[in-house]
Length: 364
Image 1 (tube, rainbow, N blue to C red):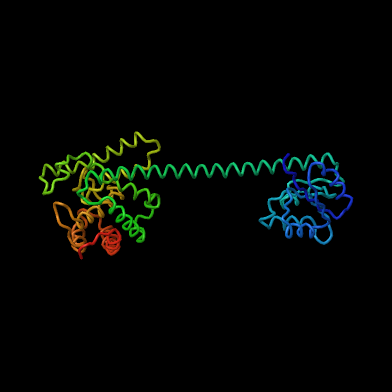
Image 2 (cartoon, rainbow, N blue to C red):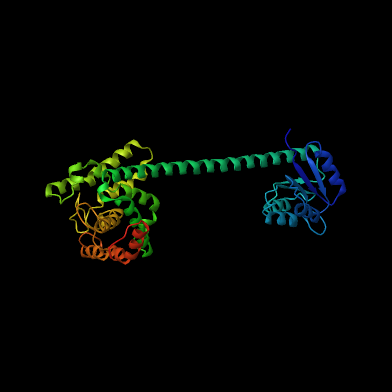
């Protein structure tokens, strides 16, 4: 047998209190109280919480309207359903009581079967409301868990494919991991200047950073003899290297075909194909210019070039930090968007700190 519900009956009439107790005691635990003050004493001094309150309207000192108003102001009691008991059954008073939060009105003297029916109905409604709230909470938790699982899966896919590129092209020495950190710093700097606020507001920044790991994924399709060549590439070899952008786009497009809900790969695809385009239109693979180059690709271009300049390769020595910044400034308006160049250079000290934190010492 389930736990019995507790009904508090608040009325200054001993006759009504007794009648309510007799009518309801077989099915519920009944607490009778002669005033609103006694009800609040019970609520404040006792752990008992009624499941429903039968409340008289016309009581001395504190009437039922004042009592329900105080109940609804308190977060601990506002959800207890209140049924008014009153001899005042005109429409105006009934509407006033309902507007204060009462769930029902019952005229006095009441018929015991009607009282029992009304009480049972409202207790059932409260149980159903609680069950619905619990169901909504459980559904919300389930959705949150599923969302977290999907997010973890997306990150795992991006990280795994990014690691494949790093292992395949280990000649660049953790270039992928460093550019993610550098891009994060650069994006923060751009946001701090208020540039492209409207466009970047729609971005999922953590996902975009994860996506940037795939900017060189197309190198998987470049022959080892060219990708790992220790010396300077010939013109023909460089043309083959340039194809890593379109190869990367195709690889990610294929992933999108195979993976449900693959929208998270869209930024990865965009960055992969556009990060070697140039502001003046002389870049590759499509030779697009200016604002036609996706913003994420324009941002990636800065950190990609900067890291390549300051890092050691088997075919080159690193150049100093300041010299790398000078090289980027020389390409202002040619390879890079002028407004972004200014922001990138002004945030230079942050890149040095980021490199130091990553265990990489930059030349001055």
